[in-house]
Length: 168
Image (cartoon, rainbow, N blue to C red):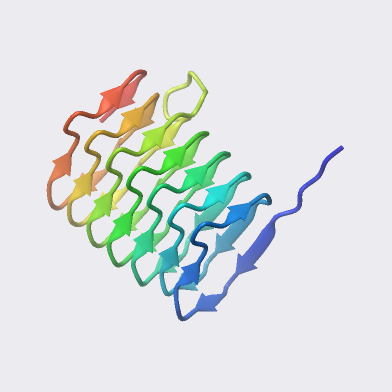
């Protein structure tokens, strides 16, 4: 069988931003308990799972038009600067559970297309804390959960499309 072993970064510090702009990654990548100076991944394509868990991202995040083909999990992570996921494509299950966005979080025209029919098994923002604005204008969701999420600024869902279950 085809076994793909992940690249795992555990207890690491990246003082500057990680630049994955335009990268096509075909293997799983895990960042666990890391400190990252920022993430530049505009136009990147992740064919396998991506995990950023229990970590801190100190600088800006730019995932404009980034494609996540498999699971994308950002659980328990703090984003201290603006996080831009505009027009990102999350094609499988996506979790931002327990995440803290200390600045504006943008998911404008992003698509969340997990294929499961079970509630909270596609796009999940359970317990997510948006300290500033949470922008989901024109975002598309198949199934999404925002249970116990908090927003300190405005929550914008103008022209968002919900085709399955949504739990707020």
